Length: 398
Image (cartoon, rainbow, N blue to C red):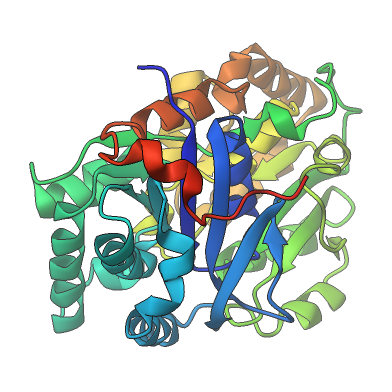
């Protein structure tokens, strides 16, 4: 089915999340209008995201699900605030479960003919615990999914390991949209070539820096192999998760924090400087971290960088099917040290060649995933679609 043009309301938990902009860019060719509604974490609320108007519902705190949930419940009592932005929408997308609570009520009141889609891109640790709060959250998830027209996931493991296990056959249609690099974000297609051989071997850890165990493992590695391994850290440190991030970096020679980066401009430069990309996460080790496929897996692979992953988790299984990557096992500190102690230039060259042999479409979305997602969002035509042109969903500034 070819996608039709949409008038989108996008409800998000963090207006500053770069992934929100990525999703808007993916759908941009199929949008006639859009508005982004959600919370912000730091500083002033943005007036727009990707050229589309942004409406802030207030400020929330990183890593504080309870605070975010209360903020959503409070906003639910003020749904009339959203009416102006909701009327005329043909598609409503909720990013993360707490925003689906708000999106379902807002859709029912102000845009009953709109398709409701749920982006399930993380499974919070409280969703899987055997406790009253875990049971309550899974009950809430089940009720919300019954009112959802489309479920968007970035990894099939979210469905296989959690959603299908908990909810069985009561799931809506599912659309897999991996966290691939978007062709629209790139000014040119890079030519892959082998990097200068090490040592020093350079490992890159990029993105949201929130995994304490990963930082500790990499800090120990550069201490154990001084001059042989260097680690570049780029992105946004989560001080809620790693409050002593700055002191760890300052006291560990070979561990370098190089600041934030613009994924639209800087990917080629930051990945061009490293041999390996750290694609391991323990932030929620008993669930989400085992199931996700991180952005840096695709960014690194596309730029010819060898991903480092645990063999026993979804990232490692994905790489194994591609025949690429440095796949490690627990005890991880021991296996990591062994691999880099024994690493020779010819072994690295072969690992880089394996990455280069992977089909480019495994790393890069050249528009086909956006078209497929847009088509999936057209599963239910609004009854009053013809009247949408007079609705107040705000158009993009040109």
